[in-house]
Length: 416
Ligand SMILES: Cc1cc2nc3c(=O)[nH]c(=O)nc-3n(C[C@H](O)[C@H](O)[C@H](O)COP(=O)(O)OP(=O)(O)OC[C@H]3O[C@@H](n4cnc5c(N)ncnc54)[C@H](O)[C@@H]3O)c2cc1C
Image 1 (spheres, rainbow, N blue to C red):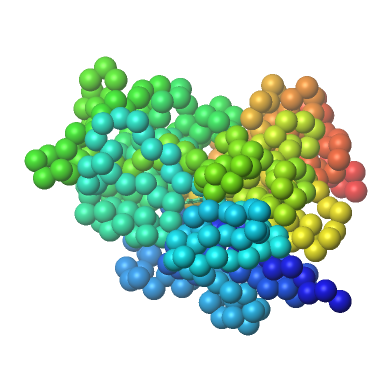
Image 2 (cartoon, helix red, strand yellow; image 1 turned 90 degrees about the horizontal axis):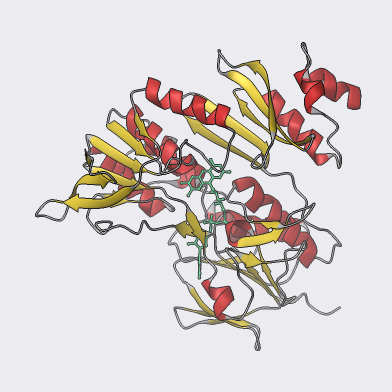
């Protein structure tokens, strides 16, 4: 029997590590190489904007509890983990990856799992010290140290990442101000009802939240450290630390330089293949077909992990397509928000549960069809809606959900 062609994965994050693990779990016996430009064993990113920044986090540099898998896993599974080296180019004609170290790594199948990087803010002053953003462990260490030394923190961007960092900063005692250009927090991700609850939670905790305003410049002192931000209209916000959290851009350069199609993400088909059938893309860097039409790119652990399992199956010759139900969570203070499905674009919402007690779900519909649910402290609703969405035709209409006494659990039992 011919030996399996070598598989090379570029990007040793969630999607990359899960891809090599899934390949071995499926019995893939060929050579496996995982290349990452960070100096670490692949790790969980979600804690980096949450508990890792808090006072309870150990003030030491032993971050092994963040590892997705221990270093010994890669050795035991005969996976060559190459940390601290960057893939500079793909030579698709010869089927090899060129690394910054000068090494050329041959592949039969290549998986691009290069993730995303923080978007920059196009205003003067972002190069001052005390202006930080977070994507990786090194960034989070720097932010954690800066938080301990900063009394006034400005977070630019009211998305998940910015709000989690604001919550951590506030919990450690800093005066925190969040500025968001949209009229509400989490504008692209959740319904207005949930935006309002999140904004109230931050305000109740003493965070100043400013929406519909843009930061136009950051100004520093003679030593080059940030001192205040200027908003349009001239208002000044004194700050010892400014956190930029204005979104992430997919890392697509390797793919585009190699002539692969890219549009805010590396374009792949439902089997996560680029137009070059030997090259796949997964995780934050991949733009894939949306079941029902169009395409999308997602930045979530669920998407990275599920695409990793899917690409491993495809490489092992299975006829599978990627159809996982998207879901996401965020923790801010004691508030746990879970989102099932993609709720953007809804035209009707129905709230179930106890909004006053902050234990409720917003069910989101479009054209009478359930798109998903946004749940505050209602994990059972979240789990049920994920199951409903996984069924091809989620049979729940807004009128049914709005009926007095409607019970999501009873509804699911009826369908079972
Ligand atoms: C601070 C933070 C908090 C988050 N919180 C949540 C959360 O609560 N819930 C949730 O669902 N998601 C959360 N996410 C998003 C989630 O972590 C990502 O969606 C997930 O990590 C994506 O995995 P990935 O493998 O595609 O990318 P990454 O995990 O970013 O991994 C990509 C890796 O590829 C490396 N790389 C890139 N280019 C090259 C190259 N040329 N050569 C070698 N290596 C390269 C990168 O350095 C990186 O290590 C969070 C993200 C961050 C940053």
